[in-house]
Image (cartoon, rainbow, N blue to C red; front, top):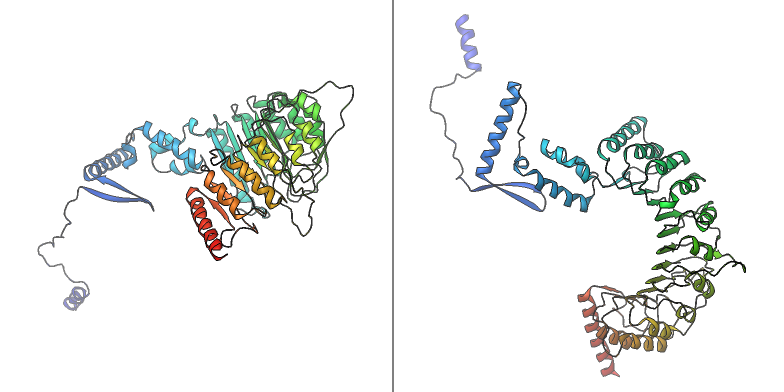
Length: 508
């Protein structure tokens, strides 16, 4: 029985037969091997470097087994000088942002972890929650994890942050602002985009503990009514840039600005939320000019406002002598008139950008009376829905505008204006300047009555033109009514247009 059982065991498991080991055929030795790093790049590593990497791995394992200190890291990245890695990280952060780039790079190896957490790489940080729907609430475990993560990030990594922005956060904004105020004394720019629960105490804390803060952006945020006013009372004297969305407190904020709360203000932008019920904003132009004499950019986007009447006893205002850009664009009802523009732009000889899109009551004659002499960008397009609103637009005056700023105009928008074809042809002829114009770079003629001959002459003369929009131009041949971007597309448009016109002349 024993012999039969032993035979059964031998039958179940084959005994190893002594013999020579099979020799595997090895591929011929190459000077390098290929490592895939991403879909667009291949890294070629010499064999000598590969052997060095193996030695480093072996040393690391030996030290770990012996319980000694780990002094070497494994991987080809550990063989690069720390300064080079730091410089590469700077370039990547400049193009991709610090978050989540540095967080991912820190997981590669020990050396990269040390370099990625260098405080000077975290000067500009942007955090968003775009992967979560704004209408959905996070479960409690996710909220706790997010809360702990953002606290750790601010306290341990952002000691030298200067520009911090956070977007689409519905919770934890007071916690974020409190952490910034206690851990980021060098903060100079703060942006809260589409965030909720911006409280008075949190914004006050930032104002008290961040003395270098010069830029505040609260556009499209749900802010407590008195938060901005309290912040301006603390940090308004050093504030240079202020971005807001229209709210019930907008008139109070303009009153504070007119009373001198922000004497160093350089940029003021107020827009309107998509779902915000619009009310009229009252602005004292002369008081604002006297209180913010260094203002360079003022943008009031889709905001219906009117100017308060000037007091007869008030002294003459010097105007915004440093103003370089004024934007009053709107796609809804507008109260802007020639007299309002003249009051706002008093003394604005340095103005370079004037955006009056949608301001249908402003006339070309009123624009030409403005004191700016070297206007570079002039936007006058109309972007209304003709089914609901069709303003009465002037038929003449385009030639006056072109004559006034032909020498300096780089961008011109005439979308939807009702100038006659003869008026436009004469104006574009002036713009061509007798055959050459090396200044104009962008021109929008959407929905105008411009003729094909005027467009041909324009394209032949404006050698610096890189953008041309001929959409819905009724007098332009079919197939050419579109937007052209780039020098090559514009040259192709000129060739096609010229050939079409020759064909039509031959037929006639």
